[in-house]
Length: 342
Image (tube, rainbow, N blue to C red):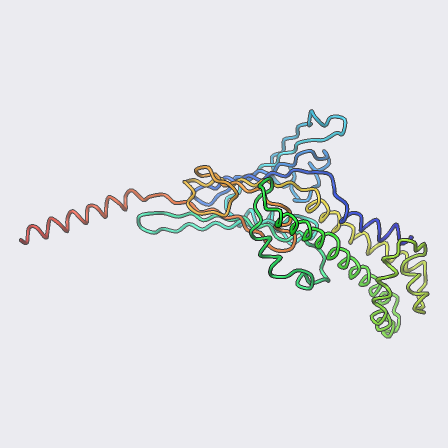
């Protein structure tokens, strides 16, 4: 396997823009904490009916509606709508917030509070980071100013200043080029360490690998290299590894790596997101991009949840008429007693 077919094919998955794949979420929140969730995948492959990046299908209780996109018939594009009722946020989280590194992870939170005159409902959905690089700390590449900028980014389609537009462009380049590229280097370097250990070589070869890390990065980054990557490194550093065995080990490790990269590419480069949360009463507090009565709407850029959790929340309230009547009654009774004493 050549460097170009191992490393550069994987790099292309995360650096090149993927096909647009609009994703719509809709959650109807009931007063008792139960949820009716809908997830719609537009302009997508029919195969996502069974296997998709949410891990949902008819087999685990979702109702599925599939409609072919008339404007994309030649490309065989479909609109797939999944819907399911959950009795509680715990049930929803057990299904949609699983710790699987090739799936979206979405956590729901529901809180209901009684405050005498009003009953409040707070509901939130948190999209966990789509970053699946496990070896490279994001703090090494992004500052607090970067995260503050991400926090104040408006929804997609909202105009931003020229300065913010330039900052966003630089930030996306930092994410998809500098950070992703170096993270992939770390992943590949770790694969080579695993190959050394799997072949029961002396641990001193791990030290040799670490001392020559910069050289290895340069070697991996060289598109003119035509040799087998692990074998090239082993030969250059004098590491005694059997090339045939290296090929098998590296293929197995690369397959797992590709799965994570495919997810990141799908979620970051091609995703267009729309999220609707319907609360039972009028919304009084939210971080939504727009609000109409009891419906909050977000159109987040993937940048919002590329590196850190992104929480979309809304709070509503309803007046407790019985509490008002009791309070008025107590007031009237108190006044009557006061007047009677006089």
